[in-house]
Amino acid sequence: MSTQPNNSQMNDDRVIVIGAGLAGLSCAFELVEQGKSVLVLEAASYVGGRTGNWNERGMEVESGFHKFIGYYKALPDLLERAGIDLDDMLVWETTMEVRHPNADEYGEFGLDVIHAPLKTLSGVLGNNNFITPADKASLIPFLAAGFKECVSSPEELDLISVLDFANQHGVSEQALQRIVEPLSSGIFFMPLEKYSAYAFFGLFLPGIPRIHKMRIGAFTGGMTDVMCAPLAAAITQKGGQVRINAPVIRLLYDSEGLKGVELENGEQLSATRVVVATNIRRSQQLLEEHFSEHEWFQPFLSLDAMPHVTAQFESELPLLPEDRTTFGPGTDIGSFGEQSRTTFRGRPGRASIILVNPDELIDLPDEEVWERTKQGLVDIGLAEGVSSVTDYRIVRGNENFYRISPGNEPKRPEQMTPIQGLYLAGDYTKQPMFTTMEGAVISGQKAAAGILNI
Image (cartoon, rainbow, N blue to C red):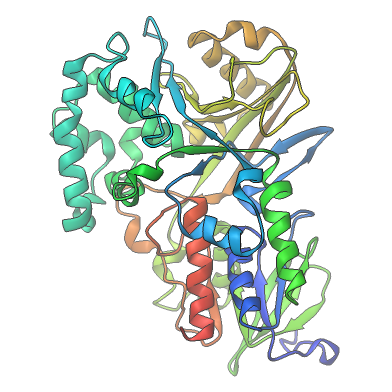
């Protein structure tokens, strides 16, 4: 097959961005703001990627249970410049809760130092029936050493798991199960023994100097609807193009260099600058055709993706009395929230649940995953909500996340590649916020800066 794009599609000055998730959209926005000609190509029928929502066989679902963290900087700045009002997009939560099957009561912890200082303080000093003062104290050496090593020796910290690091520093079993596990597996759904200690501490480190911004925001609608589609609209208003239902199957590259991309329908589009901003697995597939023997790409091509599995359901009764982030350590329930008052308004009850141990769950039938989900909810005291479920969907995938296991940090690539005109964007690329929305935005901005020679 010829790698020469059709003459009718020639546009050498244009930048093609493959993927309309937050990484691709943030990159495109920065470029159009500087007057660049940009075409964003998205394989799906909606924008947003891993921060998207869509209709799944008659039920509105989201890619997963997402929350907006108050100490983010790049994402809120981007949205503000795109004309998106955070106060319209978010409902801020003041507390979170942790439910453990072996606890007599759940723990309630304040999140907002500025707007709810008493709740925050009482969460630290209280909850003694959920976690004892001695168990809390066992966390101090662990946290102090972890944040110190995250700054002084990140490479060494990345070689050890959260579990091993906690054991080295004397974290009690109860503190491990009821605090460390919710803050690790409950967020990125990997078991403690497979979770890099550097990824754990590195995620929270940027929040320390911005502790006054530490709060969690629930979206007031699906993330495509309230965040990503308005961002795509801002790109088009500034002169860019965003095409959905346009899957790219290969990069057009030969001995003379990068020529553009080819779509699944055979259409060839020329560009001497291409940003690959797809999920990790699709990025690897696009790159390995031409660059599998290239030394620079080989570490990235060996970086594992990890699966994700979520359960989402509607019910006749709310699962919880308020919409807030909740963790279920000791079960298959990682983190979840009631969303009938926030993201999915108009339903009597609506919840999304991140399930832990996705390697074990990814190939199981939906019915079996759902049974395990229900059992986990019953185990943490939510049997009444389970009994009123009217419909559910299991949303899963193998391609969206890089595996934050010990030793994987050096495999993450930079946004600028050694191939002239080829750039990468995605939270799997090198940036300080790991696999988060903030990380995706930073990666897109770094790719744009490379194109703009900033």
